[in-house]
Length: 88
Image (cartoon, rainbow, N blue to C red; front, side, top):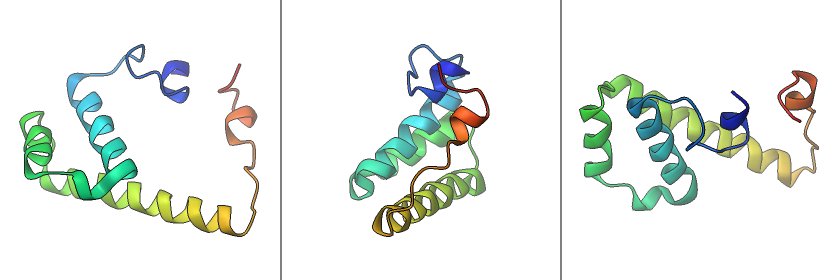
């Protein structure tokens, strides 16, 4: 679990489908305009359904929105990871 929290996907115990989804949402986060139909097909090939793919995009976009609003208003992180013992 810690590898996942730290963003070390190569060390995390992920299935191929989970890794494909996380790679896709990373692309959506960093440069959504660069996503392609082939990216979505790759998710389908890994067993993700259309509603699941859409939900992943919605959640990713929503978190990006919330983070930008929080940053704009100078809201500091609430220590969620530390509070739940997910950091070193």
